[in-house]
Image (cartoon, rainbow, N blue to C red; front, side, top):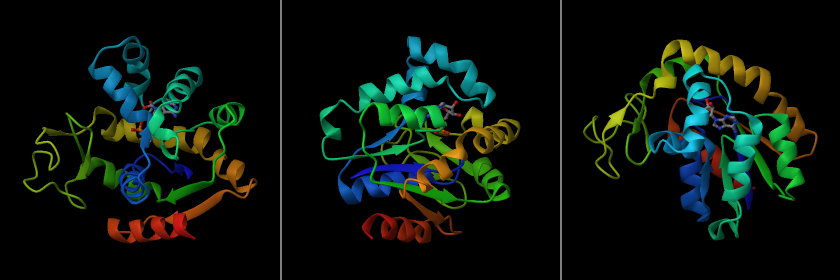
Length: 210
Ligand code: AMP
């Protein structure tokens, strides 16, 4: 199954992508994680992307389209994949069409902006493996290190309040049009993000199993 997870930054796409990945044994592909890894490794891509990420802006379409095009050629995508954070603009969605990628379902996780702001301020990510936690909703066992790899948990620079507001603005302007793009193609399923992660997960799994 080829899936897209749509939703504002902080709507919980990453967490739901991990759950679906376990359930369906297909890879979760996060353009955000790929770009952050490139930043850490100071690759050419990382250097190109840095100023956009720091400002809460989107990395240019041709850069992320190139990343996805290469990633989808890998063997582990043969039986399907979950795209988390791609596409984020209409030209990116059109690029998937041009690549001949058939999308089975698009799950749009909807969460109000005020909740997003509160959530992102408590988000922590593992510096080593990028696993995502939250100080209130999904704390790691000891609150400071990653349950999976023992890495240090940090607050992402782009989760700071001013950058979050900019990212939400960018989301409404550039990514939200994808909701009608996929709705008109009959691919869209809306999942209302719940207070408890487990409740959102239940709805997401229902959306892929129906
Ligand atoms: P995320 O972790 O998905 O919120 O992504 C973090 C940042 O990476 C975003 O704020 C963008 O700067 C960049 N990014 C990730 N995915 C995309 C995309 N599909 N198009 C453009 N920029 C992206």
